[in-house]
Length: 484
Ligand SMILES: Cc1cc2nc3c(=O)[nH]c(=O)nc-3n(C[C@H](O)[C@H](O)[C@H](O)COP(=O)(O)OP(=O)(O)OC[C@H]3O[C@@H](n4cnc5c(N)ncnc54)[C@H](O)[C@@H]3O)c2cc1C
Image (cartoon, rainbow, N blue to C red; front, side, top):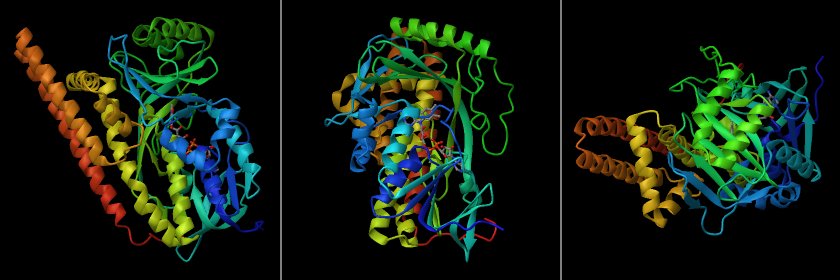
């Protein structure tokens, strides 16, 4: 006989970043929230640590910024971007006095959990894995955990990450692609060229991101593409990450020793001296560990009685560090829809209508930026040149790009306008070099590749904008069948 729990207003599945901020936002409306988290201990998998100003503003509205700063979060002023082989970065400030935050991910979760638990309306239960949703009359009316225990609720929120089981049980289609792996390493000391800034390095087989995440602590995240030009493939420490939905990656994983050699030989030389030395010392101390980088795209984010938030609703490559900003926006958007319409399907219709504009724009610009910084073709190399020239040319260009990249400007059109400028600069650079060096054939190859990339990325942006516009016209929710 199954144990029947007391009904909650809301059950949130997943006590990661998205689940916790959603619980905070919804409990602030006076709802009783039950958060079910499958892990009984701290997560092993590496996850995001840097939140852009737009996310920080939402966290401040939820009264979560002061506790995070109290726990040791550091302020981020913007980014320093390094062109291939260049030691002089382009600075991309957030602008308008906006500040980001960065903090060790495990400490972030611990701080949010204790802060939210103190507020009274949220009950957090760890070590409970949700297995399925409860259905009645085409609606979701709760969840069932692996022990067979039922947790009825008026609203179910799936915050169980990119490989969301709840999403699958709701029958919400998603495409999932394993793009690359990130090797994440903590470096001690002041090794940043531009203190208080995130750093992006291009010119290696994959982009490298570094940022301060505590007092004299720097995190370096090295992207190892799935099919890199020379050698490497990383062994993930996170079994779920190594496995995209459905099938396991077909290639044999790279040994840790070969990965270390690749990091030493292909990535370290692209870094400034102090960071290179710190990376080499860290690689001597411990074998590198990582997490998979997926692109997951969902077709909808709500059905009758349930909604997806955070990575369960889709994710992009972490190069733009927008996953948590996106998650906290999801939480704030869902809460504002519930404030307007109560715990009803009208709230979920409104949530679906409002959510996808930035999601689709982010999918398009992350794809384009990863291609440019990964430099996997002559056209991508040319676009990378063009991007840095565009940024060096004007402060307005740097501000506009940063507004797009940090999620401040969420219009798909703003990204497309930036991209066209970059492609125009890139073409001009290729043509100027061809005239100077008389290398017509090489220029033709680069231009062909550049136009192919540019037209594919602009077509993708248009397709994403059309998909977002269609979802903005949602008028009713899909019901779910008796078995999802
Ligand atoms: C390498 C890397 C670097 C990144 N860097 C950044 C960054 O700097 N800035 C940024 O904004 N974003 C970054 N991101 C993205 C960011 O980590 C995610 O967007 C964010 O963690 C999403 O939070 P989430 O709660 O949706 O998912 P997750 O963090 O994956 O949490 C999901 C939670 O659900 C639990 N769960 C899963 N299944 C069940 C179940 N059946 N029942 C109960 N619980 C369940 C899991 O245990 C987990 O605690 C990065 C991602 C990666 C991979």
